[in-house]
Image (cartoon, rainbow, N blue to C red; front, side):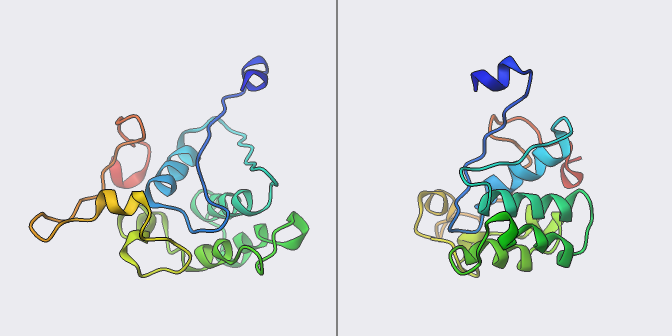
Length: 154
């Protein structure tokens, strides 16, 4: 982080799994970053392959409006991504429908999707009880502030 500050680069860190599809909050935050971060954006992870490839593919879909066939090229052996070892990344890009879907309908805790552990703490924290209404998605960021730059939160 000191190196980023020294070079006047804003570091935005997101916790993404290399083995699972993204959780809803992380996906919302990633989309928010796409819309609000100063450009150009450098996307990187430990090896620069799986999570970076998934995020790059999502950027192509959400911001650049490229077809899915083009976005999937970000998950390629040339970028050290191998579907055999990390199938969740390609799976998620293939099922991705739109930014609106991601922000309003996508719910990995629902159990409808492969490559997501619905027993994790993030799912237990939002599962409604039989006597409480289902939790509505919010338009707030990690700090509780508004996600005003995304279309559905305006």
